[in-house]
Length: 173
Image (tube, rainbow, N blue to C red; front, side, top):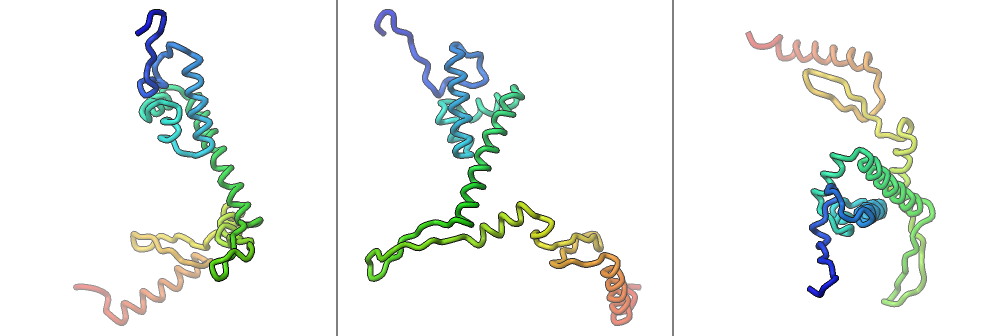
């Protein structure tokens, strides 16, 4: 190594949880990680982009509550960007080429009805959720795909059970 030249530590050897020799470098790696996480939502890929290991990120998350909060904020930014994209695809649409006979003849806007459905369920769950009521029954759970008064259901279930007892008897002796 030439005189006056410092030996560089490879990026993969730097850990976010280690006391940094160069504080600016550690802060820069954290900023790269958080920025990439906010854009992609992918933890391992973001760690790789920052030149740190996934375990280093995990250790930092466990040892530094402020880092955990920053990471949660980055994930929230990513989720908001996905929601914006879903809204765009649902209500504004996506331009798609239209081909006829192998040649481009124009474009059309395609909207996503499924995304409209998801957005309605997410933003007004009481109004648009799948109407399923959970009622405990015989040690299990019965899912009913419609609104049902629990008292009315219990009365009908009592009648059904009595009919079954009359048909098959009261059970084993």
